[in-house]
Amino acid sequence: MKLLVTGGAGFIGSAVIRRALQEGFEIVNFDKLTYAANLDNLSGFDTRTEYIFVKGDICDATAVRAAFDAHRPDAVMHLAAESHVDRSIDGPGAFIETNIVGSFVLLQEARRYFESLREPARAQFRFHHVSTDEVYGTLGPTGLFTEETAYKPNSPYSASKASSDFLARAWHETFGLPVVTSNCSNNYGPFQFPEKLIPVAIISALEGKPIPVYGAGENVRDWLYVEDHADALLTVLRKGMIGETYNIGGCNERRNIDLVRLICKIMDEMTPKNHRHEDLITFVADRPGHDLRYAIDASKIGRDLSWQPLVTVEEGMRRTVRWYLDNQAWWEKLRAKAGGRLGLAEKK
Image 1 (tube, rainbow, N blue to C red):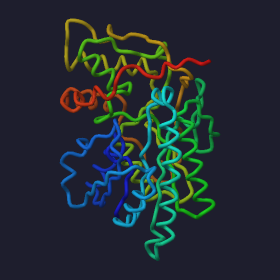
Image 2 (image 1 turned 60 degrees about the horizontal axis):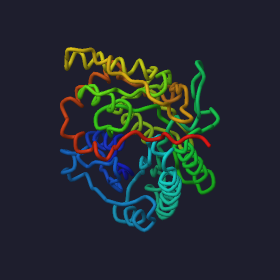
Image 3 (image 1 turned 90 degrees about the vertical axis):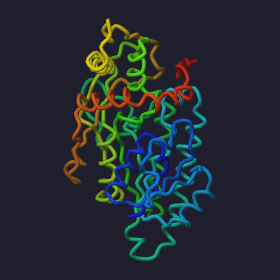
Image 4 (image 1 turned 180 degrees about the vertical axis):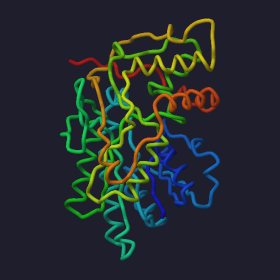
């Protein structure tokens, strides 16, 4: 199968490509190479004859059309997105442009391409739209997001992703584009851009700097190891039923403060200092509209597609800390792009 991956130089996209190449896929990586994209994530895989990189913007219909026509994919996995909630608070326009307008352009060009196909290629074509559990809003101390949970996004990021989900649904229902959608919980693991909670905590601990934790650290997330997610995405692509949505979770709920304390404990073991890394934890002003809790019911993908996460948060975090300690040259090059604290806009 030849798979067109949008955003394939990003954190999740590159994990998908690495796994897909190992499983015998041909890959077309279509990526704009924004600040969070890094072709070094595919070092060692990018010389394979089954891999092609195309620099392009999903908002550019001409570039998207050229990629479809030149490479004739059997399927699309749409991962390209602006994804950092804090950045969406400070600059929502980029999220509207990429996540909504870009998704519209991609869907239109995928529809044009799909309608040009003849059987059996037409029957085999798939458009996998990849989204987030943040579209569902926030949970209280109990309950789980299911595929039937009503959308209630609370940040510009999640609102833009919710919009793209509705577009993908409409292009399936109205135009017959064979769409399958997945909504995932928080990813972590190697190659995550150093503006997100886990790499920030690891790097701060390594350097003996304050480890910032928003609010009181009470916010709860379900943590999904990125390699488990890549496996799930390829499973949905191959086996998912057209028109269906699949929630993908790690079954690893943790409060942010407990997750950071786990990182500190691992750092104490791997890089012992004359102080506890936990002493570096510093509580900082919370993000506006910070959702309290996300938790996914992943029973549908387990029941219907026989997928389940394999990596516990304890094991995945050990792997992640070890990777950041061993790959300082990778993240050092990206630090300036990450910048300082974002998302402090106050409600008027």
